[in-house]
Image 1 (tube, rainbow, N blue to C red):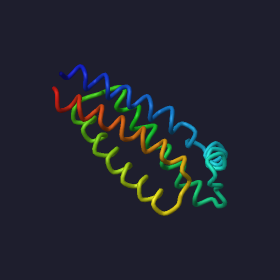
Image 2: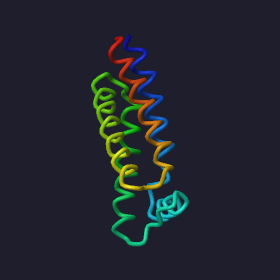
Image 3: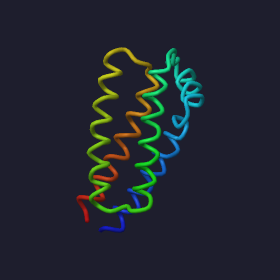
Amino acid sequence: MTRDVARWGRAGALYDLVASAAFLTPWTAGALLSLLGTPAEDAMTLLFATLFGTVVVMWSIARWKKPEPLLIGIDTAGRALFSVWFVWALWHGQTPVLAVFLALELFWGAAQLRALVRR
């Protein structure tokens, strides 16, 4: 049902917006990275963190405004890729806090995929 796709797509967009908003500026990104145990020690790290934050926030707004099956499908595929990268980082010894983000990516990806398949 397309309504479920829109509902789950908007919910996932809201989660992404909240989870990524702190990465919009170098100052907030640096503070959050330090809190997560990965201090950003150079401008290049903060640049990529804020680029990531900006893109995810913009993408979240796009999906919130137009939760169409195509956009939610693309987002679901992106969540699968993000999950792979979280597993890769965990495998290489990054902070176990990433496991929380991995679980959330898997949850939102599965919820969106289920809504897409059932429509």
